Amino acid sequence: MRAAFYDRQGSAKDVLTVGDLPDPQPGAGEVRVRMIFSGINPSDIKTRTGFGGKPMPFRRIVPHQDGAGIIDAVGYGVPDTRIGERVWIYMAQWGRAFGTAAEFAVVPSVQAVKLSDNTSSEIGASLGVPAMTAHRCLFADGDLRGKRVLVQGGAGAVGNAAILLAKWAGAWVAATVSREEQAEIARQAGADLVINRHEHDVPQAVRLATSDYGVDRIVDVDISANIDTAISCLTRDGLVSAYSTESPQAKLAIPFFPALLGGFSFRFVYVYTMPEAAMRQAAYEISACAASGAYTPQIAKTFTLDAVPEAHELQESGKAVGKILVRVTD
Image (tube, rainbow, N blue to C red):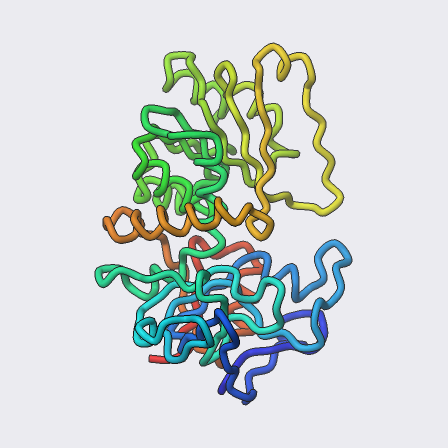
């Protein structure tokens, strides 16, 4: 099979290679998926670059956790009826060397989730890490119907997913952005209030829009930088779910008495260590959202497999607005 891979950490152009590797075969409880699209996430860049000093977990890595394709072979214990099924994949490269940036990917059967007939493969490849992360941030602490949610970074892949899922669940949603291009993406996703954090006071805008109530939940891309905003925006017993940081050395200093008096809670979400039950529930509800037509993520750009280094560079640049995809096969 043709695949993108690297044998050492470093810059995309220096270490990523596209070439031929042996076709993988599914083991017990696994399926093999003929990949159509592979989706890139920031965690793929962090693994390749050794973010935070993390070493290569395997001698050779085929990157990418997300993707969509068609099951073409199954291992022992998986019914043959799954062959030919359109699926989306999550966490394909977690705990194993080979991910979705290849013509074939082998994953546990449960991680190949049926894709509804009315959901495109592009959308399927855009689910995975962003949607699973957003789902955990939003729903780990109860139903959202009638709740108010603030999404910090509403144009990023997780932020965009959080807006889409929260609106599908019946919440009122505010989102912060840094520039007008991002604002349009957040509006298209359904955000009720879009705030340019460089031009407006976020807590003031949130308080004004909610008649001084504040928000019940915050989904935060960089809580160490946004902690004061969170404290000012939350309503009584509000909760922040944080899933990322700009620096592996970042420290979080929570103002104790405001948090104490507000009864605030803080949840930290790392998609790869979510409880199994939460993963299954997330996969089920994300699929339902996509099947309903409510999940319409922004696709930043689609590359060919041979252009994986350029795709990684765009992801790493921070300039992409939306999900970056790699078209692997037709």
